[in-house]
Image (cartoon, rainbow, N blue to C red; front, side, top):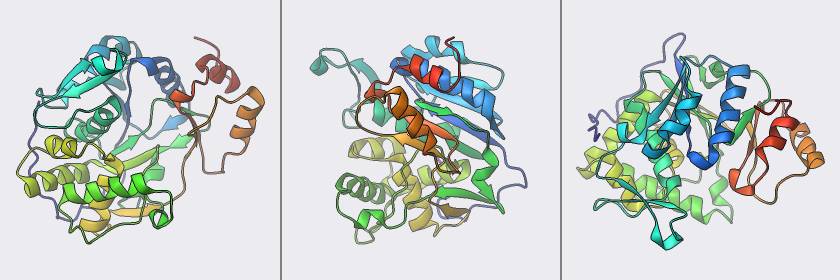
Length: 309
């Protein structure tokens, strides 16, 4: 599927309805299945205010993830979201251990690139007003109402103010510049804000308008434009669209993170894990254990009080 987005890019978003609908969105893949299953269990236990949960996966992973479907949870094949000219293959350069997405219209893309494209593309498939993005290596530990993502008809835009002005953020600065290029923002108009986190929300109508803006500027499909850069962040594209082109319309800013994440390093011992959970800020309701760190999922289940399934 190769949806064309009607450019309506710079129209101010209308206020959200009094009680907007929300959906949780998770992009995942087969090696993270058990982590995603844990996420689903904790969403069902703790999360309210979401009408649906969409899990976005590669075509070959659909059958596996169908085991997680319920009346309020759907598995979406990326073939329903992304153009058919984007082909997923086993990569011989990694001795076929990794996947690569190839086309004549983009740079070669890895799974983490395509997961970002799926998160943008779900806006044309879903019908909910607010899309809440949650990675598959997250687990909720406390009750959470998705109503936290809207206020007075506006959606919550996560933003770390000015952090990119400090040293050590070269990659994020590149992502920000590439976001500006995709959106047609004057290169001299730089941004020092960071919009990247997990457990954040976007307005669906704003994502559609953002894609329309990209297509209007470049005269090509947004997947082709974004995929040509290769080094990009979907969060940066959305954040810069809202702040630089909409001047924040339809949104309010917040920097508190709802999820405490163990980004790098080694797997935590039981005591380290308990200290990590104990150090959660009052507003934090979930934890993220980056899957590449290798923390045993069975141990995580035990430590957060869920029996092995």
